[in-house]
Image (cartoon, rainbow, N blue to C red; front, side):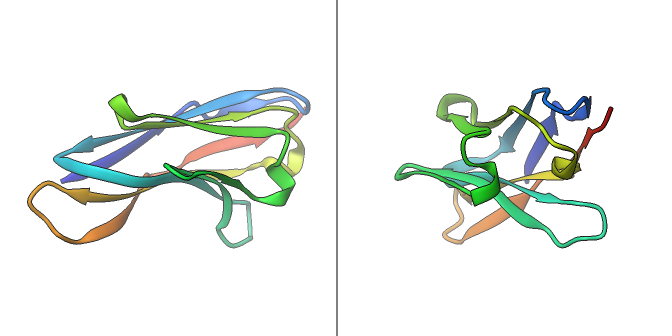
Length: 120
């Protein structure tokens, strides 16, 4: 059983910052990628950022404002969000592409989501 638990969401004023965390737990053999997606109100889920051993990838609207990082020893991914705008309001979902110990299949797992609201 694998679980992804997010934390760090909340209410912040425009121009403010938040740091999201997501820890993966369970019988994990390897993690090939971790990342963040978000779903704004009334819209579809969209990519925020991903991180692999090969590097990072950001959606264009997040470049320069958001930074993704990872602590491999803790199976944890972080998202530092700066210069937040009202349009960043969304539920933010963590994901991990991983392989469980004793299982050959690599699959994606998702967190339950954390709400980020940017408003004055």
